[in-house]
Image: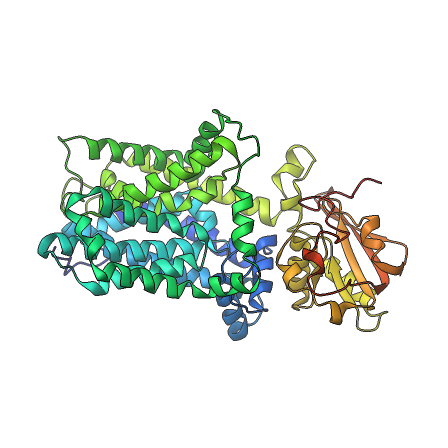
Length: 536
């Protein structure tokens, strides 16, 4: 398949039409990166980066490794925290351009800019490619690996051999995606489905190169296996329990509909409609899709069906969050872009269906602006109902909270800095720019694997709690004595967002060994989430 050999990215009628919207979305992204305090999970993962390990309880390690590397080079700041996003987004866009060249040839430039308009205006991808979570790397490596797999399979169908370097590159990228999040498994299952379903490809199941590629992926994933081997496979047990469903296996037939509706709305109504339209085109013998000469469409569809089907089935008996299905869509963006391409091949031609594309841009800009206001100025729930959701409240007030913690800590000799939840521990550690913060809670988290009984035993502490995860009598009983609590009220625009409690405590009783928080007699294991105090 010949690739585009000339033409500038800037010589595009689609870009000229969409430049104001892309400029607005880019400005909003920069405002978000530079001004929004880290989401509690962003701070939590930043803290992982200050404590490098093979892997971690909640997620695989790649994102934490990058956070540690960038913090070591650039220090601690909001821009440094989210600078890896800029790198991953750049790699993703570069790969998307190569895909557009591969699929659309002389229409690649316009196809690329339609893709960028769709990607940037999707609320799901605006948020998850901007937050310093694991997902931005996951999406990037999944797209890179999938494109490499397509290049190998297309070559295999032409000459019966294919270029092994593409297969091995796909395996390595798939391994990297798995080092980001475990749902990368759906990409691998999509690859396998394509090989099994297409009779022309089943001979690959006897090709030694396929098993060499599997070995490369497993070797790339070996840090996860090493950590779990060392820690009784806690990560695997955590995800098995999380997706295990209810014990009675009662089926809720309405829940899949809720799951699909949320997926469609948050991906973007125009985006969801365009995916449905592309699938209709693929089934129609009258319409030729841009992937007619490639397995790209088959790979994209297989990953979409495997991922969406798995989480739909899960939603029947358990909880399936819309963002778990994020890998169902990235490969579809180059395909649905074809619906908006100009009829003429000339790069200067404007897009088709401008009103539909305009709707997507306006929805995207509105949602992005609303999210930034919610995360940076004041939670919308505070203005609408006066009742603030705890996750949003956790973004505010950390300069004042950290200052008060430091004031209290100055009166103690070598104090422990403790909180009642992993979220507040991450935020406090980030604000103080120190990894020396621990969470003691009833919820199993990474802090339980950092627990050092010998280093904690007998020390005085400053203990921070809040309404969502209060300081309970069980917390206080772990000390020889405590002072009276002090309260810190966080307000925005006259609305109280959260009330924090600060306690100086003396003589921490750390238990018999480092595995104390993992044992059934750990006194704080009073609920599965540790979000309420145990009843008397």
